[in-house]
Image 1 (cartoon, rainbow, N blue to C red):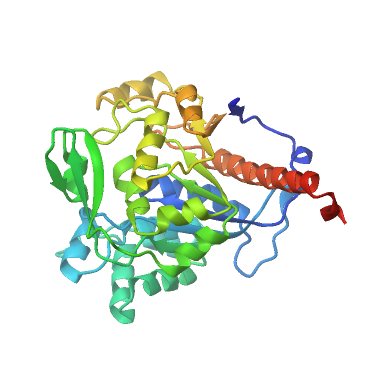
Image 2: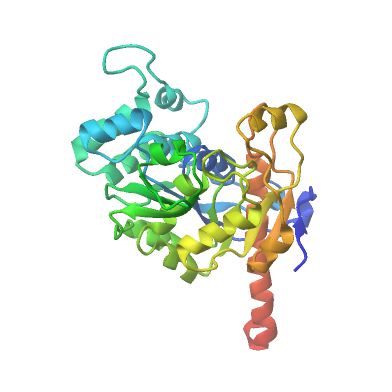
Length: 365
C-alpha cells in the first residue's frame, strides 16, 4: 500500500460530485478547529451555494462531541447544575457559526470578574439556561445552533452523565478527566462510568448515512476514545459504508501520548473500538519550526513520528500533507485538511462506482 501525498491540485482536476454527508467525531480544540475548515464547504443557512470550480461540497455536516469534561467552567456547571459539560459543545457551535458575527463573539466571551461569574464563558451559561428551560441538553444544543445559524448539526456523544476512568500501566486507576490529564503515568486502558450509556438516535442515523467519518484530531484518551466507548457508536462506524479517516495529531501530548507514534494512536483507537476501523490516516509531513519544537520539548512533547509501515499494517492508507499551520502553537491547517478529506471521499466514491460498473456492465444503462 503506497502512501498518498497531498499536493495542490488545479480546480479542473477535481471531479464534481453530489453533496457529501460528513460526520466528524472528537472533542476539545481539535474538533472545533476541523469544523472551521469543513464549514466553508457547507451552504450558509437559507442561501444558495455554488461550489467554486467544481470543488466538492458538504450537504450535511454532523459533529459528535465527547461530554466527559469535569474541569473549568464546564466542570463547575456540571457539578452545580447537574448538567452535561457544555464547553466542547460551545466551541463546536462557535466554530460552525459565522466567525465575525456578534453572537459568535458573545458565545466566546469569558467573564474575568464577578462573584460566581468569573471564569465562566457566556456560551456555557447560555447553554445552561436553555438546558434548564427545556430540561434537555440535546435540545438546548439544537436551539443554540439555530440561534447562531450554524452550518451543521452538533450531537453530544451521549446524553448520560459520564465519568472517565483510566487503568494506568502500573495497575492503578485514576477517575475523572482532569485527574487523568494531570496524571504522570502512562494510560493503558480507558473506561466510561457507567459503561453502558447510549448515543442519541440522530448520531447513529448520521453515521449510518455518512459518506465520510472522521475521528480526530484531539487528545487521544480524553477527546477521542471516550466517543468510541459509548455503546453502539464503534459498531455503527464499522457498519457504515462511509470511508473512515483518522486525522493524526501534530504533536505528542503530555500525560496522554508521549512517545506514541501515528500507528500507536491508531492501535489505541482500534483497541478501544474492538475493531480496525480506519481506511485512511491524514498525517502531517511538514516539520515544525525550531522555536515550536523547543517550546513543546519543555513538556517532553515532540512531533508525532509518521511510522508509515506500522500504519499500513493496520489496514490504513497514510495520506501525507502539509497539515501544520503557521503560528506559535501547533494547529492543523484546517482548510488543507478539509480539502483533502473531501477529495478523499469523492475519489473513494468514484472508485466504488467504477468497480460496480466493471462488475455489472448492465448498470451503465
